[in-house]
Length: 125
Image (cartoon, rainbow, N blue to C red; front, top):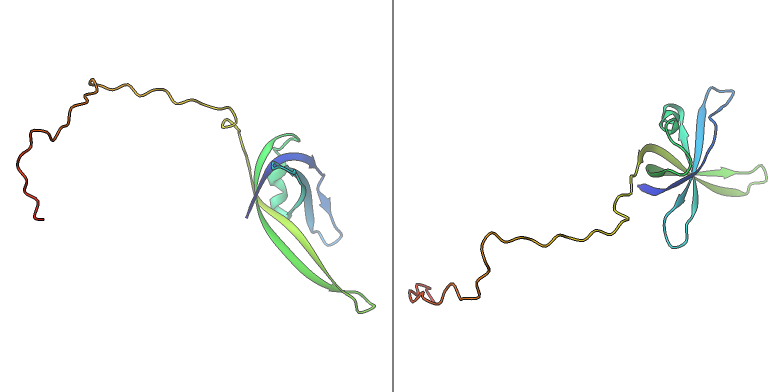
């Protein structure tokens, strides 16, 4: 799946006692009701965020993950996470309306019927 939006926030990388690393970013989607979406990058993917700046337009390849957790009281809860695996900057040149140039014809346009003098009817039906 992909999400596209503007980088709203970049967080610093976090390293846990186990050696596991993650870094998060928030993008603001570009739709009628923009949504701030938190995306986490894990382990070797955290370096994908090194060249990004807040305010840039990006397209992010994501996976949605889900997990189940049972509390000590026996209550089951479900959690979702969005994990990024690819980031590309989007340069929005298409936002400016463009107008097609009129096509120039090499020869003058003729209104005569090109089949007018064709009396040879060799159709089988």
